[in-house]
Amino acid sequence: MARQHVITGIDFGSSAIRAVMGTAQELDQQCAIIGVAEVPSVGITKGAIISIEDAVSALSLCLEQLERMSGVPVESAYVGIATPMVTSTSSHGVIAVSRANGEIREEDVERAIEAAQAVATPPNAEILHVIPRFFTVDQQSSIKDPVGMVGVRLDVEAKIIQGLSSQIRNVTKTVFRAGIDIDDIVFSILAAAEATLTPRQKELGVAIVNIGSSLTSMAIFEEGDLLATAVIPIGGSHVTSDVAIGLRTSLDVAEKLKLEYGQGVASNVSKREEVNLSEYSDTEHERVSVRQICDIIEARAEEIFEHVDRELAKHNRSGMLPAGVVLTGGGAKLSGLTEVAKRVCRLPSSIGLPVNVVSPIDKVHDTTFTTASGLVRWGWELSKSSRRGRFALQISSFKDVPRQVLHWFRSLLP
Image (cartoon, rainbow, N blue to C red; front, side, top):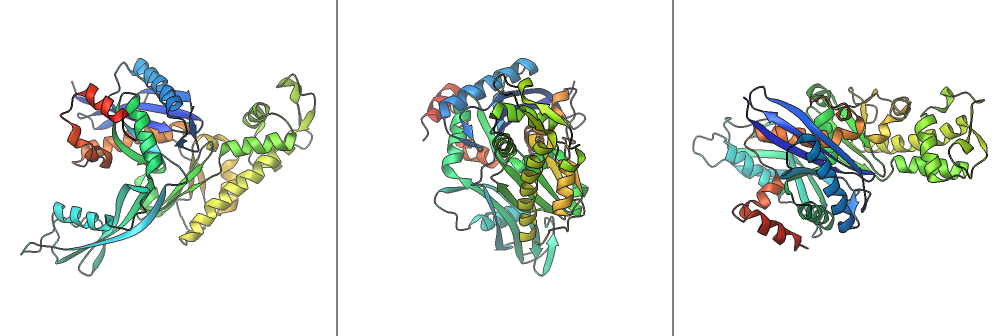
């Protein structure tokens, strides 16, 4: 029987906390999902913790449901984070190869990456990821893996992703108080890309856009490397608010109308089609045009993709990505959204579903679970290599401390 390594991913969303558990089977080298759970977010706004007590309660309930479905206790997890304060910058590192024969080894690559990490980080920021883009050995550039090559100078171009220290600490404290360890903290859009994008898409050039409840995050890939990331403070809840204001109705009614009649392209809807609001609320008695609802939705959808196109233009990729735009997240389920993305961004557009995971659970194959599934995939890729999560390295000195004492100590962290 194949030995299994259990991996858990937790996605802190503004509308829901989602958790996914998978196994890395050493015999067939596949990542299989064996459990999923989802609970409404409490104490979380725009991806940031605003009430630790409420967030701990919601996370504990989510973990309880996950353990009940999988039959396996959750001991540690890869945690996704996405707030407007998560930013990415480019960095350059250079070292001299110390060996007489000039052969580059793994430790030289690690030293180069550490050199790239020595950037001017704000005092209130913390580095989440250092992602090498390419290496240069002497005058030869665009090298993906320099190990084994010969040279006297090794350069690396890297992408540094950092977040606000207070927000990261609040997330870690919430997870620790729920009684589990953290394997790594991952920028959520990178996890979503891990689950939905193929190596060919990343090589050709692609932008993944995760439309959440309060935020839209995106990442641009080209030649297999991460080119840029961005977080846009607009999401599906803004569409609901627009509908509520436009129809002068409640948010609950607006959400129901958006889900049932929402269409990204208003011209696809007949002008004569109407809906009676009394079917959704006892206090409403008006009849409204479905075309009017879709006009409101289309305007906000266009705004979201105009922001996406501006981010592409910052990196000279507006209308220039052969693999186009891949939409995922809960907001991507809105009908007709791909047509809006094609028109505004002038690129091919498609819906991104988890393709790099296997599971008999239907709920996994949904755009709302791409980030959580991607976190499992992220952990699976780490388990196949000798690398470990950056966060795991930070707490490795506690490995000999009894578990109960460790959890008590972590609850005291600021």
